[in-house]
Image (tube, rainbow, N blue to C red):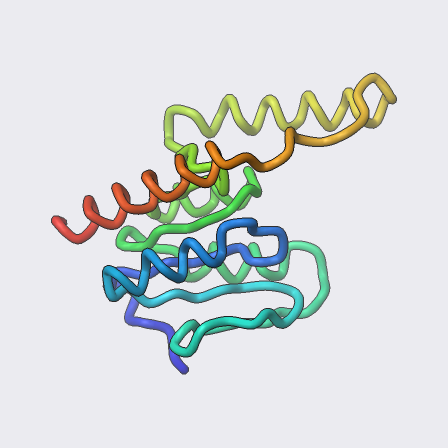
Length: 154
């Protein structure tokens, strides 16, 4: 299967740790939007979903998605540096919790990420983000639907 032309509506999923793949498949099918899932390993995907398995080097899936993202694409990721790269390419970027990354919010997200990494490396903070909730899933579905409607309208 080949990726859609760069000017066509398309969804890219950063697949390795994405908790909303099934939701993306359903919404994309309803709108007739092609999907590319990029990951370091194989996943079961529905017929028609393009799966790109990259090598296991750090950021290989991110590099693939960032290279392909464009102004008519929606990128699904929890990776803040990838979100930044895709925003610069003109894509709509949604976190897996449904919160959009925007030009106005990405700077603060990058700064918070760096601060948290420093605190974790110093042993001041342990653990990760809160568990994924039903509210996160609902917010994600609403945000993805809104993004696709906005892109379809042009």
